[in-house]
Length: 428
Image 1 (cartoon, rainbow, N blue to C red):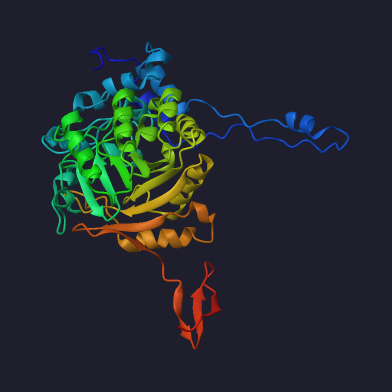
Image 2: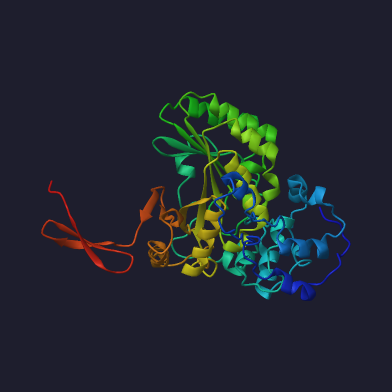
């Protein structure tokens, strides 16, 4: 863990360094006037290229203030980042000015979901604004300890649909395999806060062999989603073993990885990891993004490496009150994702886990956001809004009502501008 010496710099001096900075896009490329006398290849070579800044300015300022003697070789080592996670009240208050509510929650967290933040992600957190979106997702508040009607430790009934520990079989042809319960950074609204961070699902071979054996004995399973905990925090060796075991099962066609590592620990997405993952295609990845503040140059590099390795990338975003529950924020997020070759896939209504009421929004808010995106930006940039039905019902997609009725054989449709159009519907 970090040393005891107080690093140079102060919260007050640094407060201006941690305000929102959008994804750095580099210098705008200019266009030379076409000269049809020059060969096309020569003309292309002379077009200035966009340049991508490698490090977010917030990260540079944070390192100068708090880790001035840590060389790039350590800061960019994902294992160093994990080993130096910020986990206690004493450690957190070295970097931020805690509110009374935050301090009390950190003193009380006890047996609940532990606190852990990578140094990289802490660099993106406001030092003084307790309402900053990223800060609210990783530093607890007292509202976590309030149980509201309809909330449960396991609202999705995953434990009831687990034929073996750490494997959820809800849908006919696919399973969720929880490789372990460890994350580099813990989100305060985590659906599996009852398990994650509590050493209940170790990545021991004997436990994982039980899940592999179940999949081998269940030929209807063609799709396996690795989650947890975060699969990408496994070592290369253990991750390769898990993927190799799954690839040895003839009826497993697709392997997916659910992760937040490219966002909170982009240093993990090394060329070596990408070469490893390429060996197990077809492999898909769902990345948990929350807010456009997360879309840094470091994350851009991580996603570029994954996309260049041939891995289709999708984002899964939880709709959170006061964090991303407005159209402008969501539009900035999906546009940043598209620039990183990440397809906005799901927008989740926040699951009713215990202590989540302060995060949850009305369902109508999600529908408003989808309606504000549809037709006003690229179709690829519009995620599917879903509720994971409490009680183990699975994902239920929700859409604004664009079908407004019928007139004879005509279907009446409302477009994104609110105008009504007729479609000549076929008879049965």
